Length: 182
Image (cartoon, rainbow, N blue to C red; front, side, top):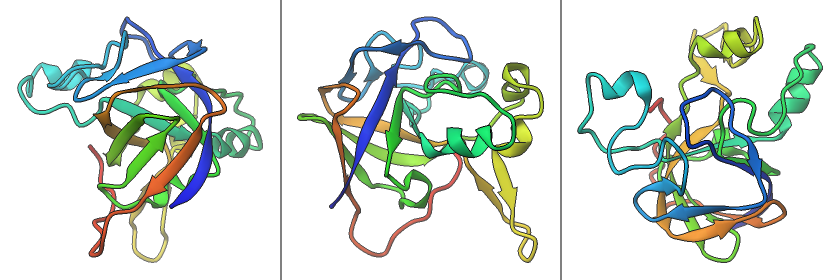
């Protein structure tokens, strides 16, 4: 297992692009972040609820790497924790390089399972004009997209998460499945 840190935790009881930072959040097994609009067993994404309301919620918790904010600052974008709608901001964890099914142990008790990549949407440009173009890169040789807007997860074990908590990464056994958009 490798280890990183939680640098911020955020939640919002209402649909809004950003989520205010909190001193702590409680992750509820099978549901998500207590008090967050996206918590639930079935899809809570506003757009997708209209046509796939009964599908399992694979987007219970949104995690983002703090290092992205420094990268965006170099390009003139002022973004901080919770600004892009994430629930948990981490440091020293290669979230985008994890395989599907990776378990992240957060703090003393909480465990989430990584389900896939966050699919960046056009609302990112409403937050900061031009930011959507920075949320992915294109490999010139293959044409493949690399999404940088964090990862999504489901809660496997209830627990409270706070800034400063350890993040322990437990990669699943081989063969690994690469992250795809969820």
